[in-house]
Length: 253
Image 1: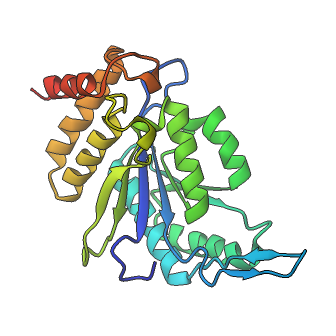
Image 2: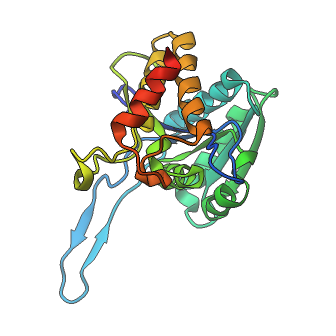
């Protein structure tokens, strides 16, 4: 979307899992820039050689803003103070060499933040083999969409990851939600994991300047996961949505 749009950046926050030996320490934030993907889509219907072509766009202004936002986030989180740039400029040179150049230029303004860069195919492996190595990941829209779901699955379930569609200029509303879909196949059955939605509420509080309240909600989520029970079916349990919600409320006092 353009610079003044309501939701410019998509952030997925994946918590530490507390689930098994593959614990993802302090968690991971994946940022992706929402710019034009599929803009000017063209479908050529010529039998039998039908073709479809999308157009993806990276702008210097858009890349600079989301990369700077990622670096500021790493500084504010105060965890590993590291930003990983994910690209695929070896295959999409015309599109992503600009992204790489802007990342290098903006990162130079943040000497206190460590940075790294890798291609998305390597990153998809690293998310599985060494997820605790990363703090903030910044990339373009499609790659971020895939990596955030993968990172959530590594922690145990996509039902754990909260998401934010933010307008950093605060000139329009931001939207906070789980990164998963509406799951109509289990709607109304009490099977959904509520922790991603509760985590999205914590992100909302943080965005509204209520940092202490946000940390309390996050701590309650962590306590429920660490206790090992209750757990919804996606985490191998047989408890219901209300059971997990009530457990979080109990920890909130």
